[in-house]
Image 1: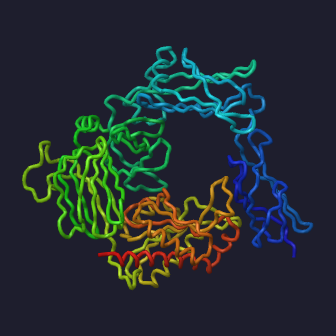
Image 2: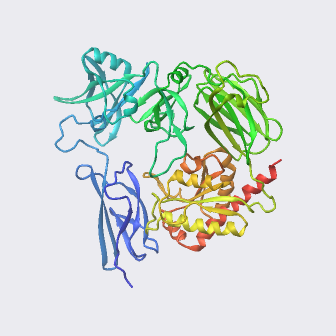
Image 3: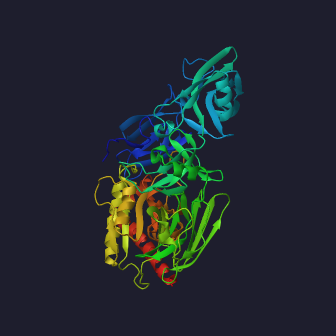
Length: 624
């Protein structure tokens, strides 16, 4: 019996901007009997009616709008559809002056604080064959042709020395003194006034010339620089984590996890990002909404002039399933923890000089040794070696009298007083695991990934539903094995990323597994890249990720995409081993169809169970 084809196109979305020249298209035609063509290319259709194609992306036919054209038929019954998308410009817009330059990215002023020698790489897209200059008063900077952008357009660029542009531009009368830029980092902008330098972009080709004026709000980093205290801004979508993340560049990936209360001097500003000085030229960029200016003059002086920040001894004490290392500080300097081995870690304090002459740890703490060293410039490293494998760690600042952390000494602390800030590093030890029955009694958080967000398969199966089905099956299997599963999400309501890890911490979970199914970004050919992968962030989670990956691959039989270090929010939580499993790919028709079935959901869940059990058994075998 014939069925009239009916289109449900899942990707791309209407008017989505697609940058690459080839991309995937997927959806459903409603019947597995139909034949399908997209832009004249024959595309296979699965029995479910799903399709996945890798095709050239059509070029724009009017402005920046292009169209995919679909035709499906089953005998005499047919259906057509068009899908509009947006493409990057490949030629000047119709009617645009020549030579055309895309100046829209330059039109919104971005406030900047710069240091001597700092440069701004300015790049514009424009008509090929043009000569492009920047004019700042009487100054002229030539932009080099950086090569083809698309079609008849090229990219042009020049590195600008911000200090020189600022100084000479204002001297030439091309700036407005003391101008503040509304909407950009208002809290910090009041600490100094910004000069707005007027820059003119001039493009010439043949007899044609076009000009565009834009503005650079600039100021040198104040001297002395303001000091800020980190406090995580509320996030109505994802919740809060008590941590402010730092980046090595203004818009780069995450690198640091600073506990709330951290104080540091400001070393730069670019729009919504603030650079913290970590000492010795190192900077960490954080969101401006996560900082507040510190008004305490003494604290400002300590930070700006790098006075000794660690003036008291440390102490290690046992806690409930963890040990706490406390260090008295004169201020809450930026700090991070790195695992240097399965039984060792390094605490690094930036912008800090060490004055430690003893650390008490003693019997029963599980700490074998403590060592400290002064790194390059104002950087202090404290190395701790433990008797057991690291299960998790967490940094925080707490008020306290540093004299309480001198260990056995009864004498007064060095000159400078005993009050200040206490840095607390909590290091979690493994739970008591029965090697013969490793899952029994274990508290395991099961996070069914999404909503919000999440991907859809070609026939519309939602990832969040697939993840929850697998999570429920895993919870049942864990209960049968004597474990205590903790479901992070039970229903369809959206749960924020940091809310998920908070729920796991508050439930005292010992392990965290986040269940997902994968998708690919535009421009990646999907057919050879679709399988099973496992992600982790902290080193103490790597072995758990390896065990889980082995379990899933053995049970599900999909291609092994390996274990991947990944900067993902739910695995950045360091208090317990945490992994994110990407069992299958929603966008692959055969894998979407499998995920709908209880049989495949069972195989996915059993693969996770096998991996968790193997990880726990291996941990039990090596505990002292």
